[in-house]
Length: 474
Image 1 (cartoon, one colour):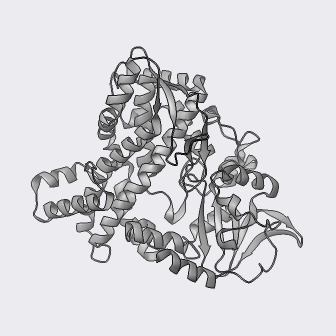
Image 2 (spheres, one colour):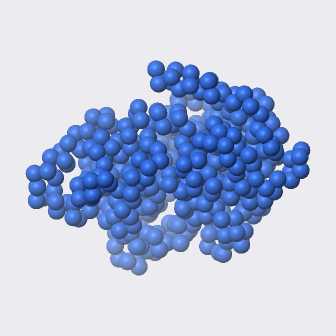
């Protein structure tokens, strides 16, 4: 019913108008299937090379979509939530699946929730989770049962994304909810929430101690929410919705990012060895079996590998917004149209605008001629002046990987710590090399790995791993 209701409304809103004023670029007909196909990454790259930073394409249901990778236009779209908001489909489906959390709210309602959640994802709060993340990574199944056991017998093939999915789920479950997960998401988050609320209301001293020590995100949020002013306080159903949203958002994105990093390290053994040497040197220097927050974030090559992977291969390649009223988009540089060069675009109400994260992150005019190449070393030297001059409106490393503005990824520091803890432990203990089976990456809401020719729809990442001498245990 939700889908049919949305389609009825959308068909009534189908734009029968033509874009007034200057067109974006040449209109590409019949490409709606190519835009969203599992192999669409190549299509997106192809049309951006031909048509540049602003492209008018045929979207879902054959409506007009503006695909934008111009930094100035992106800054306007991401910065003006009143004018450019999430699509109706995204909001309604998020409400149905997760409830009225960050994914399913708009405007002032969304800003109120972010105000309460922002302190919970501060660097101070995330720093406290480092020991917990190390503990989870070392004990998460099937790491101890499969990876270590198989490696003892010699090089073996293992589907790494299966483990990444499990460990990412447990990281957000314990780091986010303060509870291990063993049931369906909604039922379990409801039970966790009810237990925490009851203990908070009855003044449980042990629970208060856990809150003061910053054990998990939701406990801290509940504490802050209970002490907030009445107009700022979130109702129970919205805190519950945040719990479901966090589990969903943090699991697949983190496992996908880790999968891409490990895949690239296997393809580039020299980079893998350099990273392993840096991590091992840090262990020797600190004398600690587990690298703390500061030690992890002071490793330049680890940071470079993470930044370059998230730049060239962002897990979500684009996001969509809808213009809520007639407006115009300023451009970083003029574009040529049939009517001459223009420095802004007229955008009618109801137009879907797709922000190409991939396009911004790989723009040669920003990053140089080798923008599409994976080169971690680029982060170890001064970046081109064009990177700062572009003023990319993202909150991470001059990229749009975690977006920017009021709907940016609130947990990006959490995700960074997850990736660095997992990588520091895996790369120290194991050497990874490619499987004989070819890996292809499927385009979608998230870009995920799969075995070429496989009929299995679930993500797959078979890799060969072997133990590194001198590091028998994680």
